[in-house]
Image: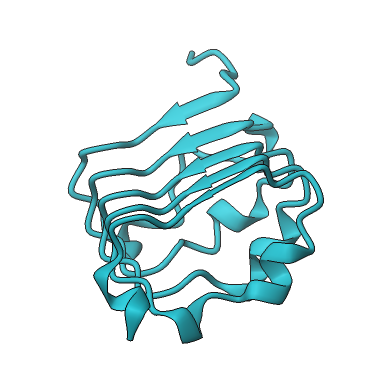
Length: 116
């Protein structure tokens, strides 16, 4: 049986949103950190947004076009790394991100479409 590790690394797995929800991510996992970098995600899966204890979320190097307003439910989030995606300014929920009082790092570098 897998230990209830507080960090889940799913990077470089060729995952898309159709691969969620995943059975290996029960809510009881109490995850603090999820690494979904280097996949094919066009959006952050709803299942990820249900882990309210999350402090770190890495969704870099995907195909994200936006960040869902539900990101506000991750009230313990300290860092959100979303570099090298297809993010657009109008699909960044700035008010919801601003409501995350613990957020210290929001990395959206290398999103060329942000300028549009």
